[in-house]
Length: 197
Image 1: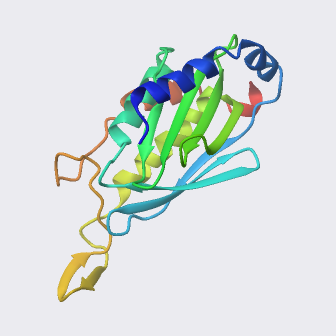
Image 2: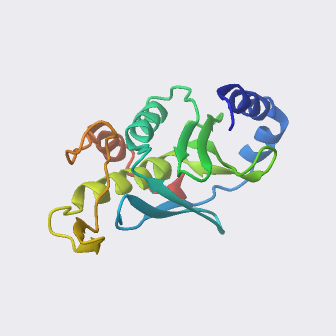
């Protein structure tokens, strides 16, 4: 099991790679997207696309990260330094992290997946800030559009369970609504496409 110190040491190392970040700032923006499947029995399959690279992982309702992700995106909108956001899918730990650049419309985005101590997957890319906000805005809109009441039932051990269930809040069984006003306002103000920047 990794400790917060392990993660902090890793990200401190990343922050110190100034030369690499400066080189990356001169490169082209890479497209980023996140697709999320319909929840099934407490799991949501997802794919993070960074340029031509795809990374699959699951969201688990045992550790739903959506409130943390929402706060992370809001910090990015406010140009605040953000801690890495972690997604624990009960098998691996995945991290999203951004670093500001000299261009306020661009970010260095880092994806990290720890598998075992000393091993994992790492991807770093220059992305558009607006595209990152829009990507996660669409995920939140999708989550709030799911009709958890009408989805199919699954029979397991003589008991019927809703096939589509997922606790978006670890402390409540209620279906929560996300306040996306900060993301909506940002996207209205910045209605240029990433290619225009």
